[in-house]
Length: 262
View 1 (cartoon, rainbow, N blue to C red):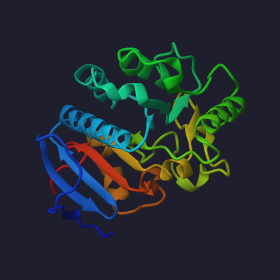
View 2: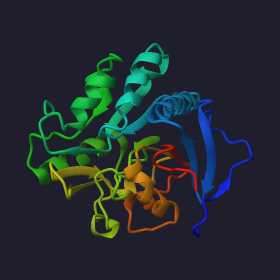
View 3: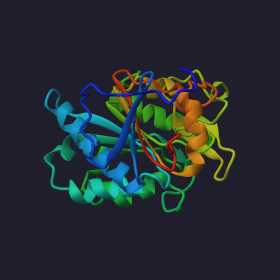
View 4: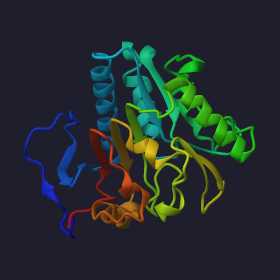
């Protein structure tokens, strides 16, 4: 796609987003929902996640949802575990981590620790409903162990139903950092990566695993993301976030700071 902002979507889509949405656009395969604030975007993603999960469970017995860490989705997880706590769907969902830092779960940098505190425990989910790396292991061993865990639960080539991703100011997503070509290994499930910031040792599902998912939702906020988002929407394939193409749906939920009007 060229330098244009993309065409505004006028036809009805199956997204049921919050009324706070102020703009909806289409950039190739990506549907982009713009909101005034991260709070509004988070509420819309929560609504979408519940809609997708309940839709999946109307045609299958269980579903898998991969979650990302970091600061951006914290409010989203709190919304899901409070406003939607009484939903019956949770008992049929298996959550797994998109990526993790090689730190103890008690560390403030742990994605598993944050998600357990804000979502898993408040929902009263069982331990077997939350798959995550064993970060007490060495880097390579942790990566192999997590791949084996996902394979045992979902088969040799896991197809995740729904993945929630974020995006860094450098265009990275999951723990796959630019240039994207340097981080894609032969392992079709999980890869060991090294971040340019601390903590550097990371474990991440691969781009191959991400792109086998039925649906991928991005939650992106902050002025520091504006430049990378523009490059993603121009299909700059050196940025990992630009390489995400889900099987059915790829959608971005972003705040106005990350995508100001032109």
